[in-house]
Length: 265
Ligand code: KIV
Ligand code: NA
Image (cartoon, rainbow, N blue to C red):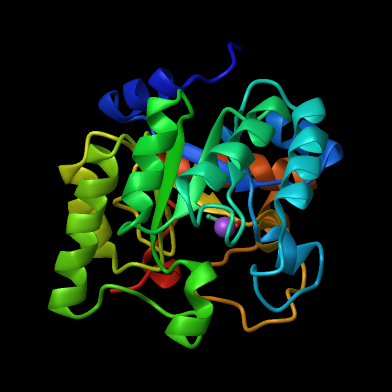
């Protein structure tokens, strides 16, 4: 199988083929994710919580993401590798460019960053410099101090309208992909239908163009936090780690996951 490319993601959306994404932090799991048929691997700043043991993603550094991107890149070749921009690293376009160069040189093919607003300038700045960008809207965990916790976003009409505008704006700024986190299913479906770029949902319902889960959640590992509604343990039905990855990919491609029990109305 050929390695994934950025244009192939757009082709997949046009063909109605759902995209599967999991987070990953090391080479061993990367090999298993590739063998299980996952399309996209995200070295997420969830690293701070599931690997480093922090209470939020805020303590994660560029150094740490670059190190884990190198580890994952050695383990998998076919999935498109996305590096998460840690808190503060995208506070200015110049800082974001420096971090992105490190991530691409470490083996990533795309960088992901949270938010719209002034981040639209950051997205444009990176895309003009040949760095593919994945945007991330809805619940943005790096906003935890302002939001006062992790909760569903875009429920009120005004917030929903703003989220739709932001989604159009990140596409216009040049993003190639959009993660929607903890967004009501109907809103995420509207946004997905409206955009040309694929959306990848987590707690955003079945109307997205793909789905992502944190690897530790897929495998039912204790998180030390209250388990969000969208989390599903695929290890039970998969029977093995690779089986869990395959079960996730099949459930996403068939439309069986997420169902209403793992989404927000
Ligand atoms: O850091 C992460 O794992 C993420 C995904 C949950 C999308 O941003
Ligand atoms: Na993240």
